[in-house]
Image 1 (tube, rainbow, N blue to C red):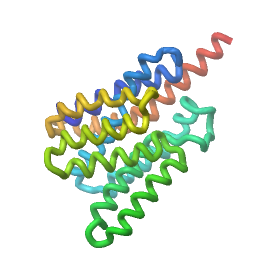
Image 2 (tube, helix red, strand yellow):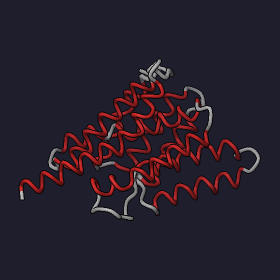
Image 3 (cartoon, helix red, strand yellow):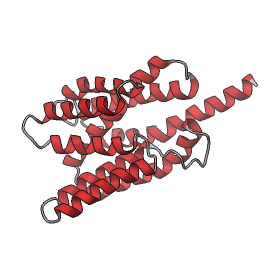
Image 4 (spheres, one colour):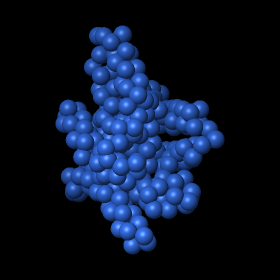
Length: 226
């Protein structure tokens, strides 16, 4: 299973999750399937970091779409724009990428600074209430660290499942451990040969666009019913 296939699974599960959250809040099964998305995206982020030709450009793209996505995110999934109580997932992914990059750059020469910097980002994600908060940044860090030791895929999955169940046992988020199956089937290949640029921008633009569409559907549906 290539990175492209993993991202498509995450995209479809995310779309189902948000459709349930916005239009069918009683459809619990949609939210359960949607738990697959975030851990897969975190895993793919770490793989993307390992293979990117420019980390600054990668981080800039995530930051740009964090800003572009905030209005549709607020309108569709929170109490409306502006809502500073909950920030979209691109902020979490940006912070996670920054932590991994910083640890790579400073872990040997400035280990204390690297540790304090990582803790700062984790705390900031929680204080800013980005989607998945401190857990999200920590999960990205775990995928990165465990990916460099012996039997990396097994260790990544074990760390992911343990962290998820420890933080979310008894809640809807516990079903995210099902993402261990597609992650375990990852073959280390990018996939999507010949369509790389088109697919990359699809994965970025889909997030704000599908949220805007869901908000519009709910808005006009409520108007028609009212």
